[in-house]
Image (cartoon, rainbow, N blue to C red; front, side, top):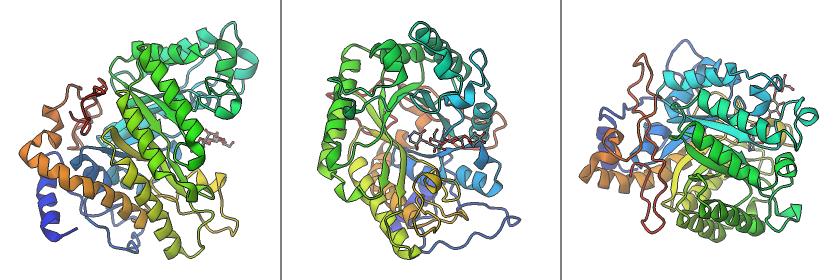
Length: 432
Ligand code: G3I
């Protein structure tokens, strides 16, 4: 990034809403010194602030294990504008028994977010996985509706007013199930039929009318994903067509791995366009890059991972319906990929923007550059029309109570505009 634009961006960053960061990761010298990133970051501004300057949200999935790690907590506070509860708001974490709720871990993450002025995403209210051990022997066709409505109502009300968005239903589409509607044959479908999706979204909307309600899905980017893209689009079109309160699509974006050479940029771009035409916003909700089939050498592997982030975001950020990029983790120290897709050579995986010592990697640079490219245009329009950087005066959404009670952070409250963009009006960033 040329120095003139860098200094210009810093001046914007000096604006009350964007306190410039001077470094990445832990600030305190008491923590182990952060190894210098192999390639200097394209800007000193953290990802969350670069994203906001371009009219997006950047964040990461966080679990309670990570927030107890001071270095990781500092890195999240520096780099992110939002966190997603990686596991703490799933049934397995919330429901120790059929008649009990345990919000301990979810509340820890909300308080962590609030203390740092971060937006908070809930994941996920309805899924066929991460169900508690009592579920299959307790929930049946006769009581499934009562369990579903009670769960969503209780959980969403508990966090009402504090949530940027919810993944209401996760991974409901699976063309391999052989159904004409392409729905996955989950316990919820077996017990309630397709109407479980309507029930989930209408119940969530009733419990928190201001949360952005998302349908979340994976496996939509490859040449082999065409059937899943079609089925997902049909589902969303049906829900929206019947007036269901679905506001956004979460595209998980677990990239890389052996299938990645089939990345279908054209097909993915067309899919994003078709989703936007339904009047839906889009969040890239779980972006990371498996590296188990990439070279062992760290430098070459990091560059290859960065190239996949670059290619993915070149398509995603070209679409005006995309409002957020959320990586599924922030540091290689905490990633599901370490156990789900380990390398056969036993080397530590390196899928995320920060390494295990919370230093920025080429993947960080690739994400920063993707926002930089948008930032340049947005910043130009922001100068003439500062509401992009001054969310307090823009958009029909209302600030959520993410602003810390103790005023420990000057990050802006995060606005959400739950009225999806009109299909005929190009949507240009999340504050309009
Ligand atoms: O909390 C328990 C702990 O008490 C127990 O001692 C330990 C050992 O059994 O398990 C812990 O629960 C684990 C949980 O992560 C928290 O660490 C579960 O076994 C484990 O299955 C769970 O894995 C998560 C997985 O979803 C399944 O819920 C991953 O961390 C999480 O990254 C992954 O995330 C999913 C998204 O929710 C949906 N999209 C795909 C993505 C990757 O699979």
